[in-house]
Image (cartoon, rainbow, N blue to C red; front, side):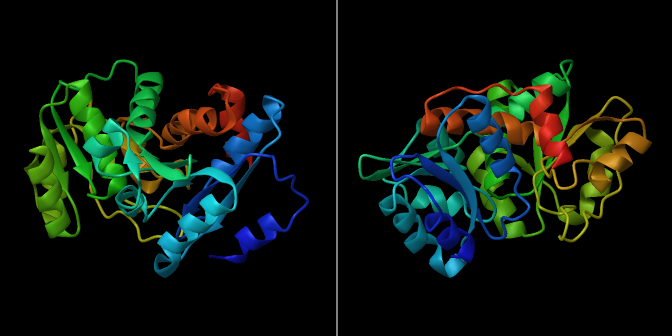
Length: 285
């Protein structure tokens, strides 16, 4: 565990204040601390939220340490969403169906796994692309990790019936396609597949600041929708390409904002609002 956590614990903190955070490897790119601290201040709640980098070798040990040290829970980001659900004592039905957790709740001496990515993804789509119709045509999902699981779950629940999946690691893609009964395409055939896609969703970290680019050529129909869950930068190269072609786009920041709402409510007892002011706060940070 990086020294962020040790500094956090040795600060001037009252023990009775609820503590939460976001864990990942890396995690410095996360905007979650900005969101949660904004809501804490806006709602006059005495609480703390921080970012915590955990190396893969220390993951399980550090989760138990956080629970022992009085944390009420953590958000989970890359690459731990599947590891998080595996170590939980209890799982919500949604997290179990998805097979990944983006949120852990420490309660009653146990760990509860939840997944709010699916809810955040759909709420963001409904707000940013109100005319989106999940049943209109083929949806191409790029990636096969924890985020992809949540988004596929959300798409199926919303009525999408033609979902194709592509991933750089074919083994993971095959397993996920079999589990959710999806169609599988080769990563090398993505460009061709976009020609039939009514919607393209990037759930990988490709295109994120500091990560390799997403090498793809969009050949979508003119009425297709392109969305990227990456939010650093907010306008990824994929979204920039889509806009240049006149395609509708939805960025990943809205998903981040909406998926954070249930976590804040569970840990700090108040259901916050996603507002334009919050979005501007995150964008300007």
